[in-house]
Image 1 (cartoon, rainbow, N blue to C red):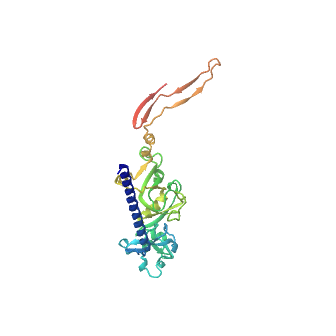
Image 2 (cartoon, one colour):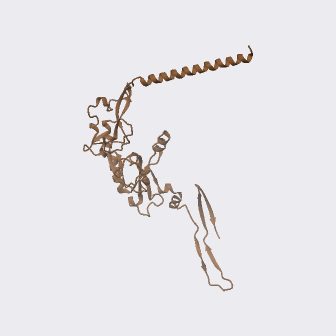
Image 3 (cartoon, rainbow, N blue to C red):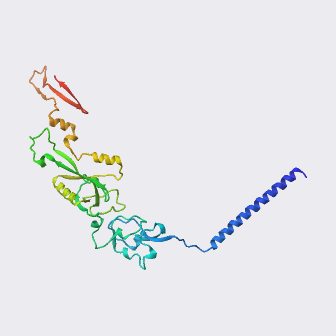
Length: 321
């Protein structure tokens, strides 16, 4: 037999075998798909339907049935505080109708009775306060309220700005070289904001801040008294704190001064009040009556020394004619 004929026979047999394999594989896959479609749907076991929030809910918002939904959770993850549909009775949503959110509730968060209050039981503001805490409200402006960027839930430091000399009744002639006039004092740190104006939460789609006129803070009874007294002493300014916390920030916070005065802020002011900063005294030129051929104006300058402070390095320079 010629070699070319043998090669053609081998190629033909290989092609036939490959075709038979592919056809068998296709028929097997098709049969498995038909069996799966024909098999009855199996009920997923090991899960429970849990009542969760159907949207983001802010503090003080009144709940309706449309705000809630059922979601499947693994039985192992179901807490005893959750509302489970199989054990909630004929009307499982009855306990949540005509209620208000005590705090912010996120989309998909399981609903619990601790997250809501019945309307009329208590005001929402008193419900969001931590046990033993009080609320106190202060008036703010764009300058004293961080340009409206402070929102409910943020934490702030409360600064008191005072005119110390006037407050203490110290005359201008007394203690000029030792007493400051203006001072900024941190009277409270890390205070929680619970409301801006009458909002317990920022309304969605209203921009990054709130045009605030009042800020309500959560404080102890003693600190509430301090804030009320401080508001009569001087101007209160709120300083927004960052959410991120670490050991370095905590150490820096612990070392921060309780108060800062005007003399600590301005070196020039401190030098002036000590009388160490001198300046030359110049007399303005006086026009003398001279002949029209030779008009002359002679300036008179008193010799003085000038003390110059360049970044803390003090030097004395003499000035003369």
